[in-house]
Length: 204
Image (cartoon, rainbow, N blue to C red; front, side, top):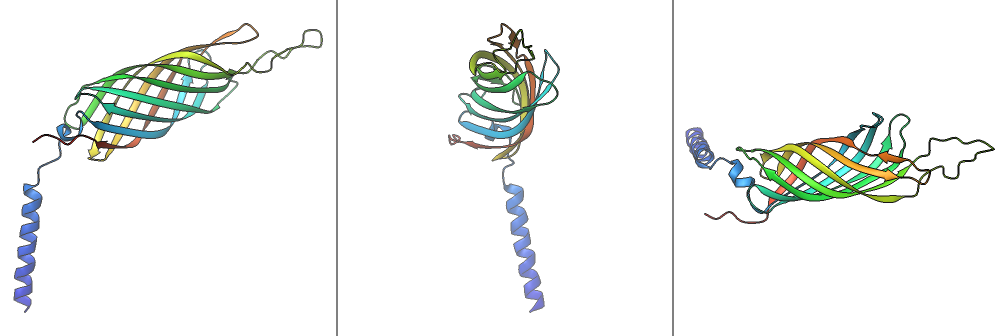
């Protein structure tokens, strides 16, 4: 009885290892291609060039591969807070544009250009006096045109999960009622895990 059970276990083990060995290895070409949808949400720090302050954003993005190396990408950022004596009260943003990819196996570096909008409200640094009062303590909430240049990479650890890192430079300005045009130029960094799925079945 013990011998039969041992033989059966050996047979099952051999079949299992044989199937695993014959199973095709997952490659980047299976994932990084037309029809791929990938997305993630991260907490992203940003550094304003004008004053050097650190801002914190909740950022999410979604991307669709139009071709094997060309994609459309949209991302949205929600301003959480600024560290130090920054002049930003709100600085939400929305971008949409194209990216070009340089895939190598499961490693997927890219560059992108994304026009968009920044929804901004700034604080007035002027204290004012009794003789010269300050009319506005904050600016009106306005949408300012913006553009971002991005670079980064995705590394696909599984058919449905990837690791990502992204650096983007954002250019925008915010005019205020007290005559100051604030420069919103900023570097933002994001990294973390995301999900991905291909909507088009690969042709055999």
